[in-house]
Amino acid sequence: MRRVPSPERFRAVLDGAAAIYLDRFLNLPPAKLPPATGGGAANLLALYDQRASVDEVAAAAASSTPDLATLGHALLREDAGFHEYQQVDIAWRRLERRGDARALVAAARWLAARYPTQRAQEQTFTIAWRLHRGETLFEA
Image 1 (cartoon, rainbow, N blue to C red):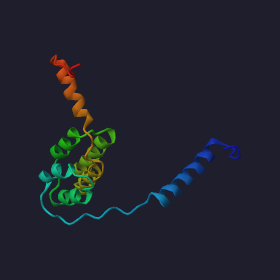
Image 2: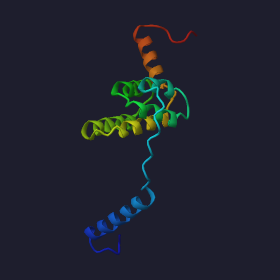
Image 3: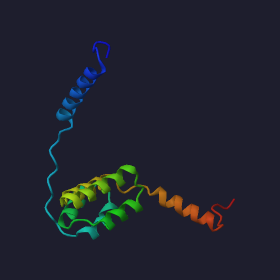
Image 4: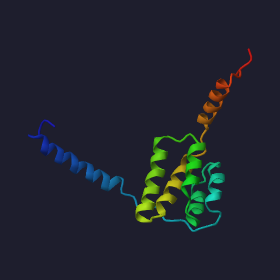
């Protein structure tokens, strides 16, 4: 930073270094679509309950494009965070704009890599609902 005489030149050097880094280390070929095995979107929720079922989820999603309701159900029953919502939103927009169903297969696969979670948000909601109704949580 001290050697570069102007901020514009420094920005150019930094942009060039970042472009080389991205091209070299993050430029991976896209994953191939798996062969369709059947089961479809209805089978996705059952597959999300299993650990390490990424390939099975991808095959089920490839056989019939998952609908937004199925992916939304999977998001809401798990402890989904910002990135999970963002992935599904981007995939759905890409399907609407480009007709590219691979985006939803990729989102379904991405969710499968993170599920099942401990589902602590559901537990938090249940405790809050019980407190709202005036129930006791623990007997001392």
